[in-house]
Image 1 (cartoon, rainbow, N blue to C red):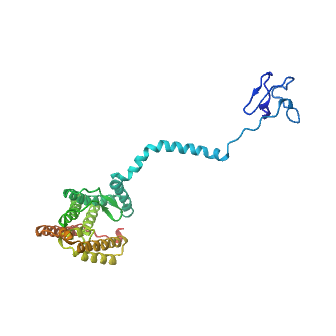
Image 2 (image 1 turned 90 degrees about the horizontal axis):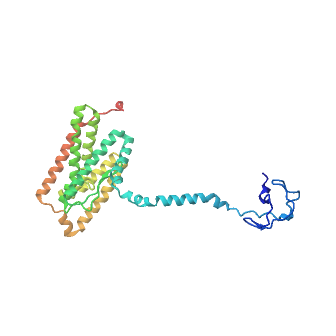
Image 3 (image 1 turned 120 degrees about the vertical axis):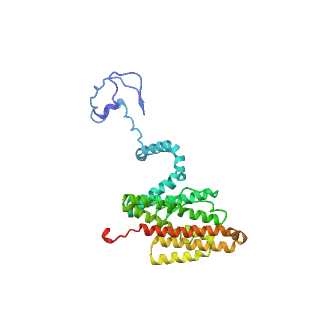
Length: 317
C-alpha cells in the first residue's frame, strides 16, 4: 500500500474535525478520491491541508544503548542480595583451607602427578594440624592451615605461647604428628609392595626433617628458642650453605626469610630487657625434654628416610 494512505480521509466524510497525533483539520465537503486511489499529480490537494509533520525520532544513542541500560538495571536489582555473600567469601574457611589445598594439589600435580601431589598435601595437612592442636592446648586460638604452593603451609596465631618452652612445644608438635603420619605409610607399602607408598613415606620423612633445621621460622628454630637461641646463627649458616650448594628459588626465599627473622628476634632479645629474658628463661627439665624430643625426631627421621629410600636412575624415568 502506498505510504500516502496515512493522511487520506475516511470513506465517509464527517463534519467533525479529525484529530491526529500532530495536527487537526476540518474535513472538507465535495467529491473525494476512492480509498487507496493515488493523489493527483503535483502533490496532495490543498483542500485537504498539508500532511502532518514527521514524528520526532529517538536519538541514535538512546536507541542503541537503551536496552543495555535496562539490562544493567535488572542485573543490579537481582544481584543486589548477593553482595553480602560476595563480600563474605574471602572470610570462609573453605577458601583458606580446602581451597588452598586444591590449589596446592594442582600446582604439585604439574611435577609429580595428581596422586602423589594429593598424598603430599595431606602429609602437609597432618603436620600443620599438629601445630594447631598444640596451640589450642596452650590456650591460644589458631587459624585453620592455609597452603602456599611450593612453600608449604602456615597457621596464624596471636602468639606461640607464654614462654620459649611453649613455643618449642608448638614447633615440635608439627614434626611429631607429621612423622607419625609418614611412618603409617610404611605398613601400607610393605603390604601392597607398591613403591608409590614407599616414595610418599620418604618424602614425608624428609619434609619433617627439613623443618627441624635450627633456624626460625622453621620448627627447629622454635625448638632452639628453648634450648639455646644462638643456634639460630648456626642454622642460618647451614641454610645459606644449602642455598649455594643447591641453587633453588624456594631455598633462597626461605634463607632470606630466615635471615630477616633471625636478626629481628636476636635484636629483640638483646634490647628487650627483663621481659625478653624471662621469655627465654626455661627450667632445666623443660630444656632437657625439648632436647630429647628434638634429637629423637632427627634420629627417627633419618632412619625412616634410610628405610624408605628408593634408588632411581634416568632409565626409570
